[in-house]
Length: 100
Image (cartoon, rainbow, N blue to C red):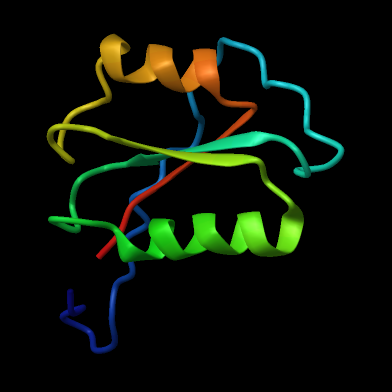
């Protein structure tokens, strides 16, 4: 966006405050022997190769026991509970992110 007086106006889309509530899970000391879940937002179709490769590297370099891949049906909507429950039940750690 340009300013009528010259230069640019920079807009910051992040909120001043994030909503409160909930507790953070304790941080894992090590990844060796753990199961890591990736929750793909489904924007990179048909497959998020970044998450696939990162999972392979975690197994090779960090001794992760298993990598699980989960996918949201639509990147524009929050993950449904039926997507989140298996992540929480079967993984020691979860990774999610946006991809373009």
